[in-house]
Image 1: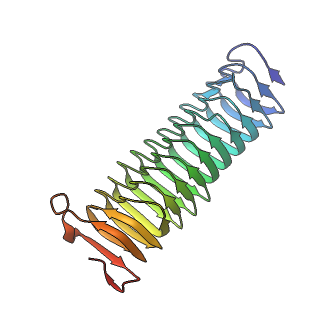
Image 2 (image 1 turned 45 degrees about the vertical axis):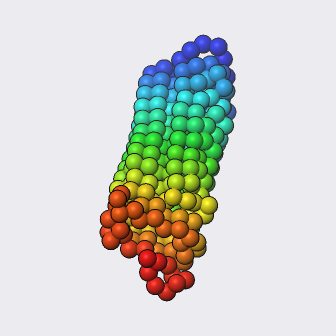
Image 3 (image 1 turned 90 degrees about the horizontal axis):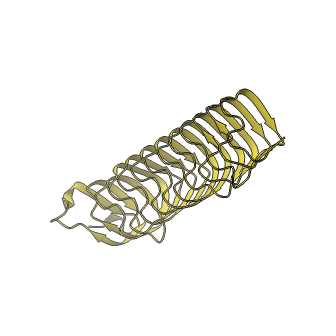
Length: 260
């Protein structure tokens, strides 16, 4: 089925299945519910495609249009490609992403209650304001990821981009590799387990930290409090005019003693 010219062809649809279909114009699925789409394509002009929709599953699909999925609940994307994912998945909740590839800035702003596995994301400013998110087995090339976020757990993943996680609360990284200039700052309750920080300088500024890291950390800069363990740390700044140096314990395994 091809939905060509004409806005909102399936507005208020309920209990429908789409197979081997395509949308070519704007606003195809607004105010819909209980939708299952397979092997379906949203072409570039099918922008703002799924808004105010509840209980939608999209499998084996390509979504070429930006600004998709807004203020929707019960969204499942499986084996989906989003080559123009700018401003997609805004203000959505109860979301599952499984083997999703996305390119575009401002992905998943204010997303809540999401489980994400095997995601590949190339775009800046993702997950701003997100809450209650788990990410696993994923790869993110993203600066300013997870800003103003809360209750985020990332496992077995790679993240590359400046200023990761600023102004957030309850961020946990397990078995991750992170490259982030001045990353992981201004965080309340940052937990890291079995992670590597590479090409990362000025980390942890004004953060409360519980970090067990592998390898060499380039620099640690004025954490507020907590404990940081790494094989070695090239540069440590604990400015008593800015923080209490005694509030943070920093240990280097290679030195077999405290780094300070």
